[in-house]
Amino acid sequence: MRSVAGPTDHVVVVGAGLSGLACALHLLGAGRRVTVVERDAGPGGRAGRVRLGGYEVDTGPTVLTMPHLADEAFAAVGDSLARRVELVALHPAYRARFADGTSLDVHTGAEAMEEEVRRFAGPAEAAGYRRLRHWLTELYGAQMQRFIDANFDSPVQLLHPDLARLAALGGFGRLDRQIGRFLSDARLRRVFSFQALYAGVAPARALAAYAVIAYMDTVAGVWYPKGGMHAVPRAMADAAADAGAGFRWSAEVSALERSAGRVRAVRLASGERIACDAVVLSCELSTAHQLLGGAPRRPVRLSHSPSAVILHAGGDRTWSDLAHHTLSFGTAWKRTFEELTRSGTLMSDPSLLITRPTTHDPALAPPGRHLHYVLAPCPNTTVGPSAESWRSLGPRYRDSLVAELERRGLDGFAASVEEEMLVTPLDWAAQGHAAGSPFSVSHRFAQTGPFRPRNLVRGWDNVVLAGCGTTPGVGVPTVLISGKLAAARITGGRGRSAAPPSVRSSSTSPRAGSA
Image (cartoon, rainbow, N blue to C red; front, side):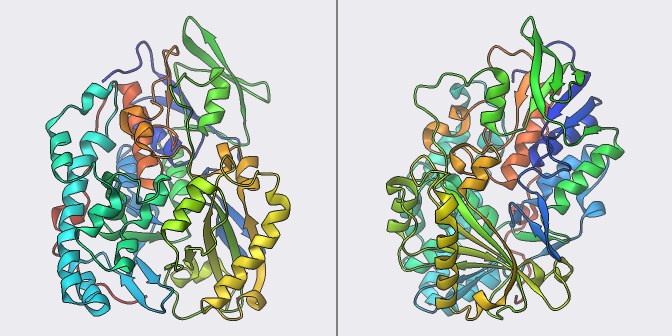
């Protein structure tokens, strides 16, 4: 593995999101002095927090999987995630509600889920689920350490026995067809393939290897951090500060001072100059390219994942059939992905993620009140409506979204709302997210693994990238790994990710309870 040559005693990390904080902790654990520069007033990045009246609102991800990856970062400085954050295992991980009125609780315990599938779709599908679970676990095992938790210097590194193992498992087939080998019920197939949207690819075109995301969601387990997802980066920043990291809050990097191929200092918009031996850019990829004076040449222009409209709503009522996370599927499926990724139109029959964090954390809302987070995928601004058009489109879409929620059983939703915040591609673009998408560069084959923008920057001897735009990709688990991989480029280290408990003992998970 190539690593930064020369002195690396003092490292400046630009960005205090999950990847930057993970990188900082791993660097501190390796004996480096670290300064973290963040343009916002506090940590989190995409996993931020806003106060909405009396409500505490997570502005980014709401689903936490693979928490052992966060714990690795804490462990680097002799700390632990459990010491800093209380995690609640979610049972069910999700509740799936379908247009035909049926619903399915998605458990991560093998026996509980098999029983639920049997109730929902019969014994043949239950047996298919058991085989699917085994396949997902094998797929994860074939990919994690070789293709996800790995720094690539060349595509030649793909030539390894694990590649043959992945091919033998069908990882290079199409996701929907591989899921269909195990499950014939169309509703169940959606539950195990909707995750392709996280990668920015429709299930019909996504590689089956992306089912590893379904493994994380439906086998490894889903957790909720008390205090909200923002509690994780907040705790990471506290641990880094306790381990000696310096922080510059509300500080924007304006330039990198370069000499003989190396960055010698980071300059802030305030005029402050921070001398350093190496730099990690964990900011948005397009922002990193601006600081570097341009993006590296690629044969094909980078494409970005679909975006999302999010409605944060605090109100005086909730609905008992909502779990902590509820997937509300429309009738349409293939057409939905066509609209999101190709035609660039809003979903005509939307599939939605509804999160109710006050299910397990009522302190996020005033007494007797409830907080709901409704995520509706939408096209990014490259293939769909422009960012500016969302200025007028947003309020109209909000009203249609609320009407759809009421049609799907959340009667009285509109009247219940006391505080709300609507986030659209206009807002994502204003935050600097390319194509108005918070999900960064998509995971088409040509933008995956060694073909994704690399974390070592050609022509810059001591600059490393971290975050969802580089290796290994989008999602909370992968950006945590990204921070570790960036640190390894500087220290020359290579810590392996520990296998989550479900890999070591996937058939002995306890039976899940109710929402």
